[in-house]
Image 1 (tube, helix red, strand yellow):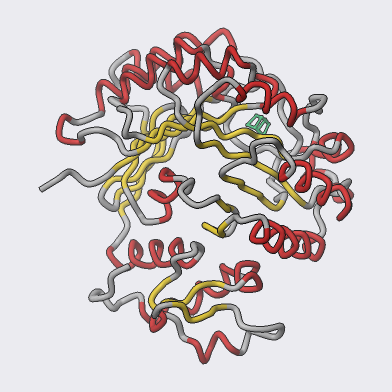
Image 2 (tube, rainbow, N blue to C red):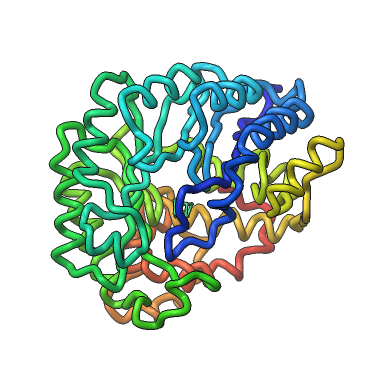
Length: 372
Ligand code: SF4
């Protein structure tokens, strides 16, 4: 039997500056550890990849800021992953790190997809997010990508910052859609208030949920008009540019966790590595396990998690898995799901209430005969 498709997530926890909304595990003070950290990631991969795993379908460098690594450091990790031309290999980047040279070096290292964190093109919005504000950011990306033959890339946006108006958000989206080569994939996240961040401590900087909902609805209709397809609540793509790595997550697939604070999943066992960069490196260097915790889901929990994730995607879930009578009581402004090819797919309204819709999956959790 062919091995099950699997992915590899590699966390690169180094940033130049911490953004005011960010609660990711990352550091601005440990650049001196980058070389040893890369060695540790390579060693963990060589230790944990099984012969029988075969070629990974996807590799994803997330962070932190993976584009702070050199092309050579990225290549060593990609090689240790056993990735081949058939693998989707994505690297998250900050726009300031992208030049024609770095794009060339990353491509030579085996990267075939970039995910670029722009967040907004409006300086006042970036300021309110506590983020650097590079000048002419989209032109810089165009120039960096111009000479490369990279076919697939993603651009990340954030909406709903306290300093953002509808006009600011529209200006960002329209400038992205006016790029000479439009991003084949777009992700847009509503700003969330993460405990412990500067934004969490300042209520005046908290997002307004109604404004966020309005911007989400506007964004979806604008992107659909521009030819993008809804892929998952926060993702849209041009045909043929869906993110395979995210689809692995959304379909309950397996993925290895490499690096500090990385989360992995294998056959229903979820695990996560220590959130301390130093402890991670020491564990790998001394032959100890970097795993800080794990849980094994029951088959019911696994089913419910997979169904909840599938519900958030354009694929939806089988129509009969939802308690439609119960759901209708919630729908004050129109249906939350539509019937499409025997499946229940969230409407734009429904996507805004996805967690509440998922509660109506519960009566079917114990039906082990169901298959996604
Ligand atoms: S660049 Fe990304 S990971 Fe780094 S601090 Fe900002 S949001 Fe967090």
